[in-house]
Length: 115
Image (cartoon, rainbow, N blue to C red):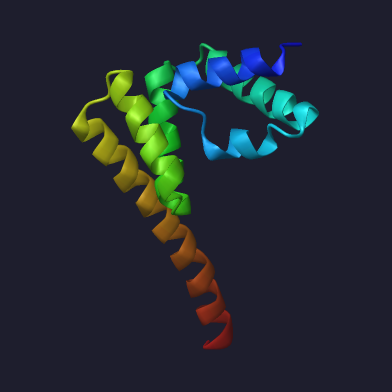
C-alpha cells in the first residue's frame, strides 16, 4: 500500500492541487488510502477514456449541485482535452438528470395525493 505522501503527491499531480476532501481525511490514513485506492481503481479502468470519466464527473457534480467538485472536474477535463462544448453538454445532461429525478419523485407524490 502506498505511503500517504505518495498518495497526496499523486492526487496533486492529477488535480493540480489537493482537493479539500483529501485534506480533511488526511488525518485518517486508513480512510484516505481506501478512498484513494477506490478512485484509482475506477480511473485506471480502461473501459472508458479518462476524459470521458472526467466528463461524467462534471455531469454528476452539476446534478448534485456541487460547485467545488464541478470546478475541479471542469479543470481536469479541460487539461485532458475536453472541449467547451463537451463540458457544457456534460453539465446540461447532469442538470437534466437532476431535474428528471425531482420531477419523477414530485409528480408521483402529486399523483398519489391529488388523484
